[in-house]
Image (cartoon, rainbow, N blue to C red):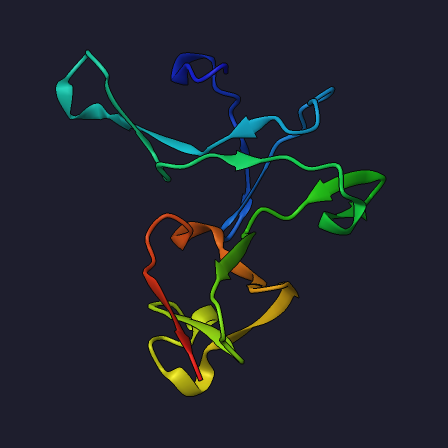
Length: 145
């Protein structure tokens, strides 16, 4: 849809909370986001529609085969989680952790925090799978031991 909600591609409801669409020839790195269009039939003969995005951030398609799986002959990317990289540089630190407001980051419980791994010199990092519906809405802090 090139960012235009009027050009959005309609998804098919597959039951429960599963929706599906097949879009051919999407280039690697294409960005997308979901929107909901709700028709209001209370306006009499005139239909009023409310369009809202489910997120304020974009997802990005990746051709990394580990991010996708083959289902009935189609390569399917699971966008229910996003991999988020936490990276910090800290001199003289032995161990660095990240803790946050969501379960993947311990829900502020330091005993459930994610330990960052030293990558180069004074740089520590970790990649954490975060549910897509909270990617733009969680808080976190780094701490060290």
